[in-house]
Image 1 (spheres, rainbow, N blue to C red):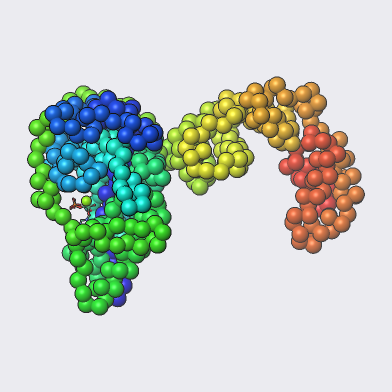
Image 2 (image 1 turned 180 degrees about the vertical axis):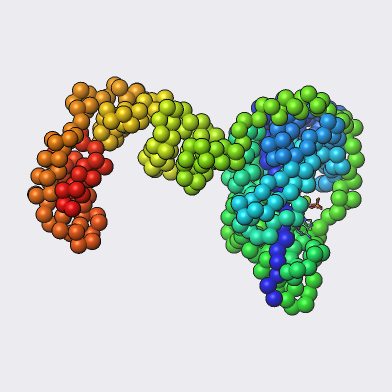
Length: 469
Ligand code: ADP
Ligand code: MG
Ligand code: ZN
């Protein structure tokens, strides 16, 4: 029996406010253990939390960017549980009146994923296992989080992964979080159940918690699908439970049978209670939203005529798209896009480098270089050399373009050189004619060598093709 999977995702995202949610401690990642703490974020008796206004604004911004409704009046609530990462034995969260309700996104396959809610809460500390001992680092305690909860609307892993990626892109674009899964600033819980295709009722779900990479989410979905279908296939019933994930084996394991919200004894947080946002404040936040990634992608494809795959790369990180738009000013957008993707992306290795995009050649300087090429003032060979010198120095193109560079070899002179190259590379020409397309490169290369890069390779190739036709 092939079962249909039903998945709902809960995503925790750390907000990048400078300070924590209820005190003035920094939210900086890493640092000496327990260095970023005070009596409030370690829950000392008698300390009083006061709500960081920026947290409410960041969370509301996230909600608006995801198409949700922001409540003018929402309520903080205590969620009780005992665990060493939370010294007060309750987490201040939201319960029946979260800051945001609704919203969602339409996936590339046309299916809609609805959001149930987005609420704000404080993060807990972190347990550090040292042999037989466990230490606690409270630096993360009190870091502001939003929890984004979807309806059980996903039907396979690829939908979940697309959602996660677009969630990341959107939250980064509006500047509320860096969403770095490797640093724990974005973590997902996968709720998964199975049912026989065609059934309308949902099956019993498991919840696999704290997945901190795309691989972990995909693994959890795969192994939970396999585990539950085996149980159901053998006539058994799936138990509602909370499961953990082991990155080494890629497997999930039972942690505890699922608690109900009753178990948490939620009640309104008496030290904070109501969070208010006026309609004017909500409209101000809506008005301050930048162009969102989906709209930007559509504009790049339809207005700037950039192929969709390239447009996706350019819109994934806000810094890259801003750089691209400045570099493309007044020239064919496609040539700026091509240069960034084929030359500049090839120079960097990691996702983090794209995220923190800050190349040695400024956008204005790249624009200057591309303008010279587009106008035919310098050849592509010269462009390449000049770009190298710009990268090394951070200086503009004009500093490296010599009178000799701009004297491009074209016309009859170039044609004569191409004819010479064809005559001197008869073997390559023959190879090309017999189907070895790459052989033509040798002939073009001969021309480029002869002109020391002062010819346009595309133009030279076109002439060579005409000569040998
Ligand atoms: P809790 O707060 O106890 O974790 P919720 O009812 O708020 O439970 O649901 C949490 C998540 O589980 C949501 O993302 C929801 O879409 C998902 N979910 C609920 N029921 C199912 C189900 N039967 N199968 C898959 N996911 C489910
Ligand atoms: Mg849950
Ligand atoms: Zn503190």
